[in-house]
Image (tube, rainbow over all chains, first blue to last red; front, side, top):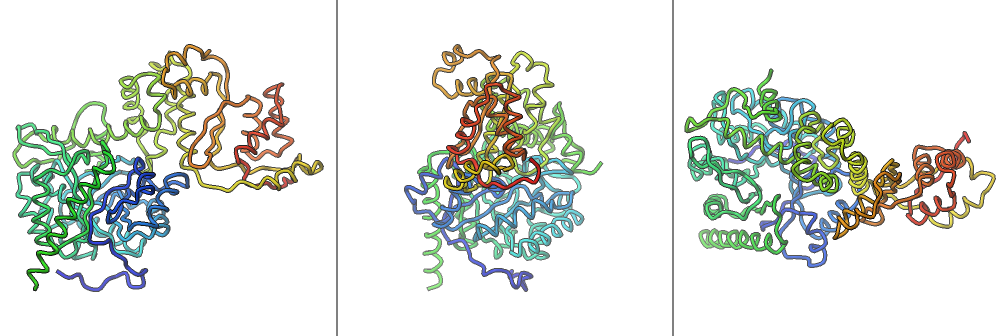
Length: 298
Length: 259
């Protein structure tokens, strides 16, 4: 599917993330990155962590940003929220994007707060006409305010809602059709959610619109069981990427072609070299697909 | 009640519960699954507080701290997606939390640690150059009416307890030995200031702390010095100025219209 007219005519020249693997930027690694200048495709930050006035976070980010492409990933906009979007937060986001000019900006199909309260988690949304309209109007507002196309990330979920009338893939496809946003395909989230809800993750990827996918996330999960003894996977971002997720990633790449890919790690942060090794593993798969698709075209 | 209001209230409820309207593919109890969200919210917020307040946590132990943090979170959930400064009101909560009463300096240690986080993320600002400062200090007729703008990272804490010594003891390898040297009920004052990329916490005389705090609130030089002498008969103006100058803490000056 090709999205029609971009509503962001007049926006700054669009630069894209390189078709390489990147890693999350962690304060633990700031100095080492500047000293060692590792060969990595890009860095991704959580927007909210850098919404501070000054100090070391901006000191290091501005130096790292001079040397590497950057993706800014929001976790606090609450696009799926019943509450109106927080205009102050949107302004802070605009300021941050203006300052760092990232190649990509993404947020989640989730809500993170209600009323005045911020809950600091990515919470699930029922999939029906009313929530669809609300999410789309929030995305329209975000894209208008930021004057750029955003990528929307598919969620990892642990419960579903009896009020839902649409499949998640159908819901996401409709958001893309109505808002022109791009997608951030979190392959770990696909795997986690499909296992948690008894679905086939390969079917899920086949059901998504793939043209708008502009970034992939890979991460690790934790294993628990639900009250019936069935597996319940937790999107922990605290472990290496699991083999089942690498397999699904390979399948997604075959369908999508090569796409910038992030290794996400937010808990139990390992040494920089460990994250770089995972990024290189992703990059070998990316390039393998690249070669494969070039050969197929030849 | 809206759906998300139900959901949000169940996330922060004291007892494990779950909102209506959830379904599961295998008919299993949704409560177990909802508990994942509850756990994510509560644990991530407790962890955020533990990151901000490491010495506060050490003073009471992780188990006590986390139980206290859980109660704090239920009463004071975050009001902003910016979690760096979440828990600014933890010190005030500690003062009203009876189980913490046996550690009378706990709230001030928490205040000191929040000042440290605020200093870390405060705006950058260039200091006034040394030449301008000496010129100013030599200008005796105008000096009393001069107001100072201090570095955005600067924080002052005046405590009835030995907050700086207690905090510093927790930065050493042998905390128990270091604590044995301290009389906790000695009044101390702290200067919190970012130097380059590092936040420094130093013990300063009570009078200097009063002087700097009054300057920070906008009082002119003479009035701040007067307040400082009232707070501490041993107030040493030269030493207090020296702290500010050596710390690159003066970023601009202006002449007040009122003395």
